[in-house]
Image (cartoon, rainbow, N blue to C red):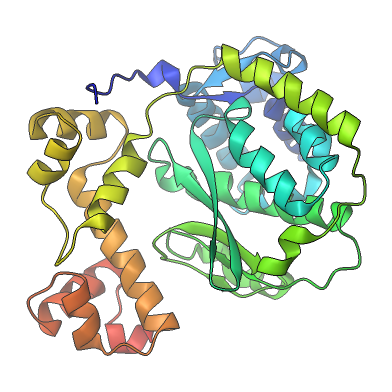
Length: 337
């Protein structure tokens, strides 16, 4: 394995999403000129399917949009307004797939055509099918906007593709519950959990076999071929955050230290720390986030005792774990449960 090389310019998102966000702002009285003032964004670039925004430019635009609207729940509404075409040729490929499982497989395979800031992963866990969002860059306080818009769009597109199907499943988010969510909880048709180890959509496994309403093998093949061409033009930055998290989780008898993880990646601990800093995070932050997420999932979805959870997370005793958990969430493990 070679040492991972990366640049902030390597992480991008399709400029096509700008059109949707600008329309959202316009409905709230924010002009295109005001929304884009001073940003290195060429007017009309969102009409070019090949145009991309760097993560840094998207970060500035997204923060401005949130500030101008004063609507931190913006992601949910953006997602609800998206159509299949909002996701370019990937949307058409998914729409014309034979089954939901086929559509998700394409979405995971070609998601780089939409963004390299995050990555999609799918797998099964017991009776659940799981669609997980992995951060390629640390999203920080933009995570709600990005993840909620994505999950919201997937929900409404699924309703178009498999109509008249009972909505079952759950949503998990890796960040704390936003203050605004109390006003939205009653509108979300499935259980929602925050402070989890990963951001995930979970739904019954059998749904993967459901035939889609607009299944069209010929169109699916044409759209997938176009996605293949787009993939060739988009640089794939290394998924360092995901690699670090996988190595952390693979350790037996506790979590490995930064030196051990760096060794697995064939680099020095100093190099690993520097690269994580470039991605907006640190080894300790990743470790704390992972421990917090696993703790919340164990407390809310398993019968494990607090002592057992403390041991599983590498703490010498329950009191040390309780202090760390209170620092993360402001609550004791027993109160959270």
